Length: 321
Image 1: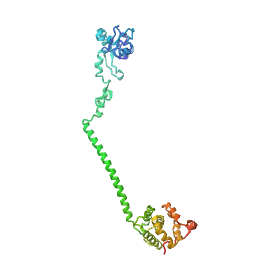
Image 2: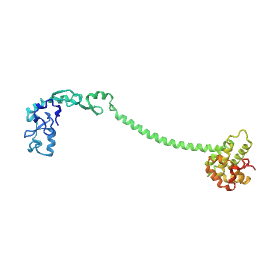
Image 3: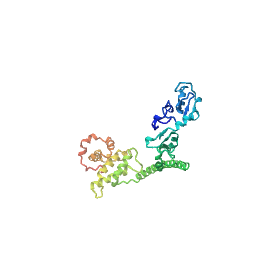
């Protein structure tokens, strides 16, 4: 490839023989090659042509790479003529106003500020007049990369160790939470102020009553709470009636309390009294745990008293002896 015709200042004064017949560019003096038949080409153009066809592109004479000579060696006069052609910078479209002889063009291109060059730091290509400003903000390579890589590797190893410790701590926390939950249940109080907690405790152990929660103690707590509610003692919790119904429902639904508490309540006072007490506040406490009531009512002849559930007076004491 030579120099574009657009860069030639006076194209009419340049002989046509100085242009490459393949690419039609003006041949660069140090790049031109002559064939034995006297034709001149750009070195790249004739080399590619001979790879496809071993003939001169102009007169179809047989031609090999070994038969080509440089213009400087083959015809010094042509060589000088090429060097004296007046041209302008190939970056004239980028506002470079340099003009001179073709032989001087390579020297100018080495310093042309409009020529594209690579940043010595990041290897990004841009015009030379932009490089100085670019280098002010261009990231520089780390001078001690090996040391930083080792530090990064150590941080990664430490991260793995921390994650392992975190997993162990999570297991310990879960174990401690479970122990604290058991301790809290073991410290469960049995009085009218903790009826709701008692009901929640029983609802969590419907299938197996913990040994520290005896049926007799649960029955006595609710019997005494009911008596305090009837007497309307001033220290009664505001929600004592709802909490009492909830605790009783949970107790009757619990397998651990069925044998003791349910038999005691039913035998001593009769089924109707228990149902009267449960039925009167059924709608009020149904929102606690509906499944408890499904299970409770499964043990009682609900159909007999079902129509009178919400109409029976709430003054019958199911715990009265």
